[in-house]
Length: 221
Ligand code: ADP
Ligand code: AMP
Image 1 (cartoon, rainbow, N blue to C red):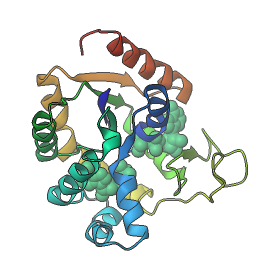
Image 2 (cartoon, rainbow, N blue to C red):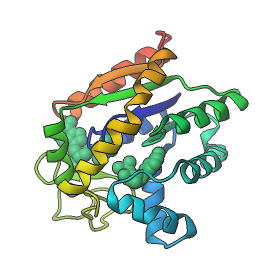
Image 3 (spheres, rainbow, N blue to C red):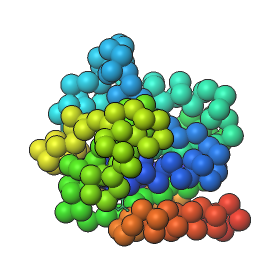
Image 4 (tube, protein in one colour):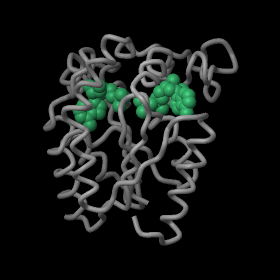
């Protein structure tokens, strides 16, 4: 299974990615997580991305594309992958398409999570994240079992610097301007499928896995 998760910040991509990863045994490749890891370690890549991320702007295409092609070359991506947060612009989508065509491994499906904007802001400002394993929590909807540490690994949770209302507004502008055109890009290729991301996490997981199970059983995307 080779799939892309599409949808605005806060749509629930990271939350659902963990379930898909387990159900289909494919690695989750989340560009935001890779950037944050590099920012934390002050690598060259982290230095190139940091200021853009803090403002809520997209990191330049050439930086993202170089990073993702290197990641997709790793052996664990050979039997499928789940892209979370990439592509986010038409040039990124074209670069991905060219790369996958060259290796003879085209995408199977692009899942778009839909959710109203008022709900997005509520989800983002109360999000807390595990910097170690990418698990996400929500102070109200999905709190950790123990006070502010990850249920899985015990690492203290963080409030991302870009998870403030002001930066989310900027991220949403970037989404509308640069990422929304991907909906037409993938619809033209017959790859786009919608999942309603309202309701409980369990409801959304059920809808997502039903869709993907159907595709794995041979329903055309
Ligand atoms: P994305 O990866 O698309 O930015 P996340 O998966 O990190 O979004 O979810 C954003 C926030 O919303 C997190 O705090 C998460 O716990 C919460 N969340 C995700 N799905 C739901 C849902 N169905 N109902 C309520 N809260 C949710
Ligand atoms: P995310 O963790 O997906 O919310 O991404 C956090 C931030 O990382 C974004 O606001 C961007 O600044 C940057 N980023 C992540 N993925 C990409 C991408 N595919 N293209 C450009 N910037 C990205």
